[in-house]
Figure 1 (spheres, rainbow, N blue to C red):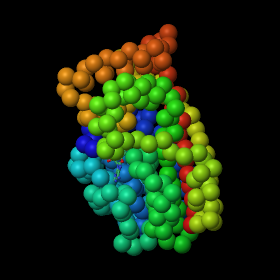
Figure 2 (figure 1 turned 120 degrees about the vertical axis):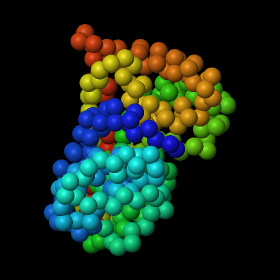
Figure 3 (figure 1 turned 90 degrees about the vertical axis):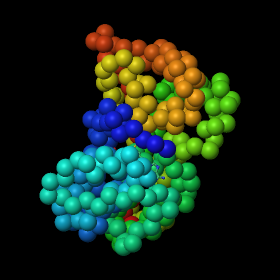
Length: 258
Ligand SMILES: C[S@@+](CC[C@H](N)C(=O)[O-])C[C@H]1O[C@@H](n2cnc3c(N)ncnc32)[C@H](O)[C@@H]1O
């Protein structure tokens, strides 16, 4: 899928917060190798490089658009290797001390093989740190799926496109990782994002889950889809008296030590 870095970064502050909350719980002091899987525009990759100045840090992403934006930003003092690759088939050339991934692995299917594969890329005592949205039951998502379901041709076209998939229950990841790891720490947080502007929830999803849907619509179908989805979201997320919109957003965090 072609990503739109500008749209994604409209809510850069809100999207960075869980990435930092994840990093705060990573029990690694001086790693030699760090890989940021699905690094996007590299905001958190640069923070990883600053936190671990002696580490070889790689930002890996499948999107040429996101990587182009990442490589353009200045990274004073820190050397980061940007690599275009598919996470699904990525194998580390040398074992990695920290595999970090913020808001990316929900775009991949087959977690029952992906997560063990990622643990296999870790050095002894290495850490796998992952954050994924678990908000697929929220109106922002269910209303979008309802609009898709009303359009069978669109639903058919989307079957072959990458989508943002609902991650499993916390216990699913615990059972998957515990036999392969010395310690597994999992928690969930529901953020309450305070969003400004018109149709802010739709603006948010346009940068992520809604993107492949809009791409799969013909130009003449897009306006109708957006009008219906916006109207449904306006009902579900009414502005507060101060004009701001509250957007509850649940995320799952996983920190596994090999
Ligand atoms: C929501 S963005 C998150 C970006 C960044 N981690 C952040 O927190 O700002 C998801 C990123 O995952 C990347 N991605 C999704 N599926 C991928 C795959 N199979 N292989 C590599 N990158 C992938 C996308 O290109 C996108 O840049």
